[in-house]
Length: 391
Ligand SMILES: *Cc1c(COP(=O)(O)O)cnc(C)c1O
Image (cartoon, rainbow, N blue to C red; front, side, top):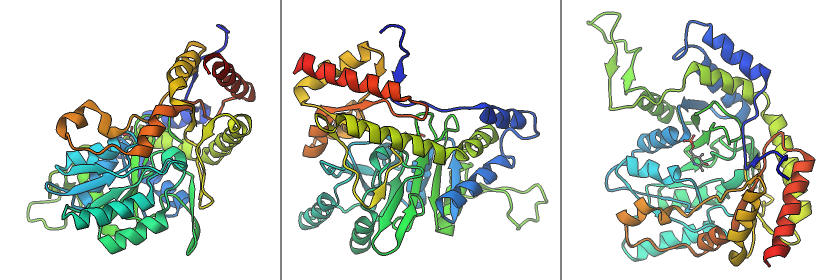
């Protein structure tokens, strides 16, 4: 047992082509603000099928500039899913807005569109403030029901930012427009992806926001680099002129990261194939005795995560047992409103029933390109031996 390698729930997959592309940037003239970032952005646009891509140093930064570009500020409200990483909701707080949560669907684990619809009506009836932006999270790599969310956005007048941090390469199948890659923004204003090492492809740290709206893309570009515009043609000042037009940040991606991103993107379809194959194997082995995430027919998942559900009474023991046996299981996620910071801020958060139940039962098991069939069998055997040990 001891000789078997530790298996994390996810990890990067780096080969010599990645190393070569980084090395060539290191030996070039530009480590940052060179040609690699615009190249990576262009490749992402082509792969996803979207007009504009604005890369940044993390998805957290991308979510922040996305909210700012949509005008989120003090007095505004943003709604998102509680079963997500804290960044999905922190981005609104950075802008001075407040956050509220819409429960997940018990089977898909993504934002429940009927709960969203019901909450909008209830808040209107109670005279409460309606959201300026809703951030659906494509949990585990499968799309939320975007056509329905877009319809609600139109009726209720909110903007939509998809948090697709898990979902690069996944698709959404619309009854109107057919299949499109997540990020093509056919049913949203902006989509954000993460390139953290556990995600679909990596740039070390990194993220990107995609949109078909030129003004939003321009605003996000401005905000990621101090609010400074360089190519302003005003100038009595002289050819050195640059202009700070708003209060931006340094959220730029480096050329080193972008070169890694370009090289990784070339392997994405292979990664997707492997992840989907692993997910199919797990489903086959586990679905009889463990709860698994339901993938609706309107989406193809990128399979970033593979959460299994067990009886709440067994979860802790099973989790510890797997960790003790070298399986780097995790829980995705603690409902955001349960975080100490959020509790201290706001005492009135209603807890979301489906999110609570899912949280009490969930264990994410390893899934990443490079995970072998023998690893899958090992994880599955440990789940079953744990189940009979503790049940
Ligand atoms: C990883 C993740 C983020 C943050 O991504 P970073 O690139 O680490 O900033 C945001 N939302 C979700 C759902 C994530 O999984």
